[in-house]
Image (cartoon, rainbow, N blue to C red; front, top):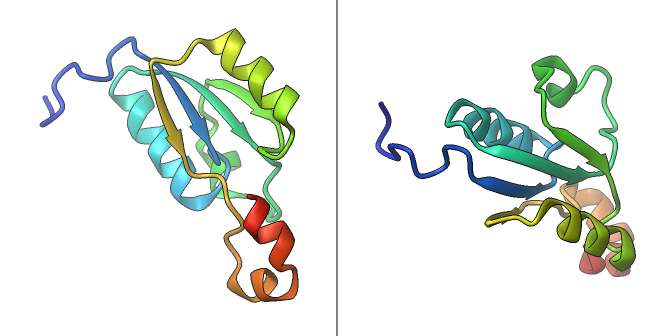
Length: 105
């Protein structure tokens, strides 16, 4: 039993950024709580990544959040009841070098 009870059990959840550090932990937690997760993210830069090590059985889609059609198709297919948007440019040094790319995420 958790403080969340059955809030997420069998709920359709869309999680952007699920392959990142925070997103992969959230995916693990939501899976533990019984959510039906569709993850939408880029492939992680590190090998092995935390996401790869978890080996979670979810609907794992490699989509750039800046691709409107791909995001729209994923949303229409998964019909989420809950959305967690964690996708973003996570590297501060890189964000200074490419401001436009960082802003667009």
